[in-house]
Length: 124
Image 1 (cartoon, one colour):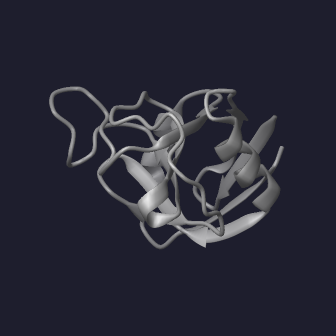
Image 2 (cartoon, rainbow, N blue to C red):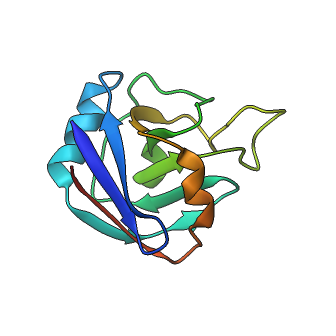
């Protein structure tokens, strides 16, 4: 399954949902489309979404381009580099996240997005 992440700065960016955490991926898919406003934390964009999912194979270190759900904040997260919690070159969320997808292409395009920018998620 594919989704599109759309901002005024980036235009549409495609991502693929993975099988790693199928319950989380399905809950997010079922909630689409979603509109929100981006928050930034280092090289991470996150925003609250209308999904309430439990931890599912949660990870404390993620990879470049991972899409994840952060259960404590009911948040959709896009990782494209180091965060304030990172040690060395790792990409570390604030706490464990459910990775459910991956950006198709170069995730660093999200470095252009500023806090408060409108972001839309839709089925691709």
